[in-house]
Every structure is written in structure tokens, then in C-alpha cells.
Length: 545
Image (cartoon, rainbow, N blue to C red; front, side, top):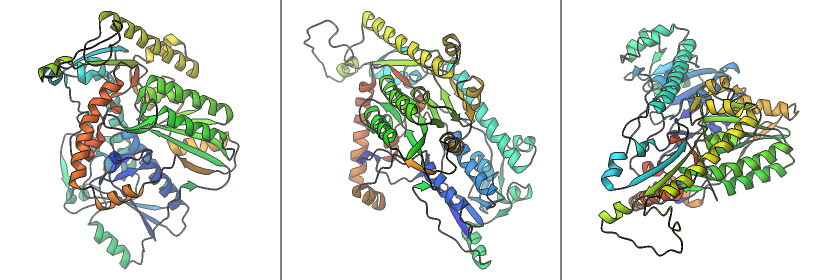
């Protein structure tokens, strides 16, 4: 019998933890934790001898570390004795990377194979802001802290170019070395294709990059004739038996208050909501160890510290480990300084130890549109940070002092947790991002490894011979969400959500202004404009096709 693993939609690390109208989408998502549980069920099913890995054209993984985790699960299936057959209508770098873990590779007869490398595109809005009369006053600590570069510059900053060039070079090297190793071919064979040459199915078959050119239905029909039947494997919410090890997912930008959907930041993790979840988990006696799974580019420094404090209390009662997913930078790194050991994938985007503050002045832009304003106030600085006037030199000086204080706090936090001097941390910090492997060398992370490695280490730390792995938090889909997801959103709802998203972006920008932020550009996304058919103007994510 064979089981089928379907990869479709944009890759997320965990299921949505916030439910709202803005989160309802007709677009599907690939959820890694669900994939993780499905692979575990297949590994233990003795009736399943073969696994069809079907990658649909809609599948995309914005960050290479997500591909790392998926490939590792495919390797574990192979190690369990399952025969893996990979199928896609076209092969790109990401497809070759996953296919290299499989025993057989099948390509559509009209498909093509093309290996092009990795690119990261950035849009800059300074000229647009100048034309509209919107001004930004930016205070930061760290020359690599680039969260506001799209607003203050017209092209990429040399320091930002340096750090991200290093990161994508590392990611490309990891992907291509792994492909060459999985195919047992010289790296030169792959390098020859990176010049932009593409192969059709017959050429790919002749050169040994695929084993067969076939449609997916032809493949299934042949297996049916060979008496190889499909088997549906039930995915459970937990894995194994015994005392519990909890995987606590943290995915999204960090904000104060409750978790919610935000038009500018997407899914946000509120300190108030998450602290309650952590405290509840700390009181659950059946949970013997916790793996904090972080996929966040950061956000509010205040919220990050509140969450970190709750995690420190948790770590005082039971073993707490950290597993970094695709991104664990800035505030995401801040909250990771609570567990031990800390795992990161080879290409995880982490570090970004720095602080930034963005002040908005839209007064001129409003005046140009005929909107004027007056203010009645008791003191000189009472209207600072309203977004209707620029900050004065004195106010900027005060803001700079506040940002500096938060940065010093960040440095001391890392120094204490990583047993490194503050001066050494500063050399590694300044807002710089690191790939996971580089972060290990810089002593910012303990080990390279994925979720499976962290879970196994947590079981050992809890002194358990076997463990039941539970995935938290679990949020149920509302009846409305289930109905809309099944039937599709009406046009009226699409237009309404688009308008709400655009208006919400403006409100969100004003809300985060004049607050110390520990945030990465990857945290600035507009997924709801995408869902509503618009454009992602903050296209900060790396796209690996």
C-alpha cells in the first residue's frame, strides 16, 4: 500500500492561532506541524510501504529553513524503510532539494527542470513617501538594523547588502550541496545548470535528474494495476504514549495585549494571550517538558520582555528547549533566550540583536489633501507621537536615550544567557542577522537541528523512556470560517476585507510608531492584502522556487 503526502499552498510553521474574518482565506496553506504528525503516522504504519510525495504548483516556501524541516521528515521516512517517490509538474531548486531525499523522481512529460539559484527582492518607498509628504524619523541601534530601510532609503544599504548576501549565499550553498549529495553527483553538474539553462522532461531523464516522465494519474493507474492500493493515514493531534512533551508554537509578530490579526504584520502574538498560555502550561503536571517553537521576526520590546519573563518561570519548573523555525530574529531571538539547548536549522534567519524606533509625521500629507488640524494641549510635548507633526530635537534625544537603554538591556540579556561578555555580544549584534550554522559558530545558538531533534532532547531532559508529544495551542475553526473556506468568499467580502486591510495598515503603522521595536523586515508582511487579491508591498520574504 502507499500513502500520499501532498504539499500545497504557502508554507506555515503551525496552524493559525488567531481566528477572525481577516484570517479567512480561500487560499490553502501547508502547515508543517501537521505534516510532521502525518509523517510520524506513516512511519509507524507497517502496511504503508511506499510514499508518494506530490508537490503541487501552488506550493511555496518563503524561507529555506522550512524546506530543511520538510526534507528532514522525508529522510526519516526513508530511514524507516519507506520507498519515497517524488512528483512535480516542474522542478526548480526547491523541488530538486526535496527530491534528493527520495528514491525515485517523476516529472510531468511536459514539465521542465530549471535551477536558477536564490533571489531576494526589496521594494523601497522613500520617493513615494516624499511625494505624498509623509516623513519618517528613525532612531536605531545597530548599523545592520534594517527594518525601516524601505522607508528611509531608495536602494539597499551597504551593511544590509553585506548581511543578506552572506545569508542567501549560505542558503544557496546548503541547498545545492544537499542536492548534489542526495543525487550522488558532482556539484559541478548542478553548477552547470545554474547559468540559467533549462531541461525538458526527456533531457532531464537522459541526464539522470529524474527516473520517469509521467502524469500523476498515469502513475497512480500503474500502481493500481500492480495491486498497490492507496491508504489514508489518519493524523492525530498528538504523537506516541506516556508522559507529555509539549510543542508550544509561537508564530507571528510580537505585540502587546491580545493576539490578533493585523493588516500590516499578519498574525500577531500578543503578550497577554501568550503569557496566559505559558502559565497554564506551567501548571499542567502531566506535561514534563516543553519545546518552544519560534517562527517570529520580532516586534514590541515590551511584549518580548513580558513573554520572556513568563518563559523563565516555566523553565524554572520543567525543562524548556527552543527550536527555531524559519525566522527567530530580534524579538524572536529575545524570547528564545529562555531555553536550553537552543536549536536552529542551518539556514534559519536569526540574531538581529538591535532596536529601532519609527516616528511618523503625516501632517504635511494631510494638509496637501485639504485636511488641517489644530491642537489644544496643557504641555509642550503632550502631542508628541500623534503623527501630525515631527518630533522636536529634544523629543528625538529622549527617544534615542530610550532606544539605547533597550539595546543595552538586549545585550545584557544575551550575554547572561549565552555566557558571553557584553562587548563580545555587541560585536555579534548591531542588528545583524545570521544563518543558523553561522549563529552556532558565533555562540548565539547551541546546535543545528530541527523540531524532531528538539523533541527527542526534551524527552531525554524529562527523564522519560517514551513520551506523548502534544502540539499547542490548539484553536478550533469557527462555523463561519469553515463555511466560507468551503464555499469561497463572496466578492463583497473580498472588497470589504481589502479596504479594511488598507485602512488597518495605516492604523497599524501609527500604532507601532514611537515604540521601541525589536523587529526584522521579515515580520513586515501584508498577507491579508494578498488574500484579498492585492499586492504584498513589503515583499521581504525570500522566495525559493
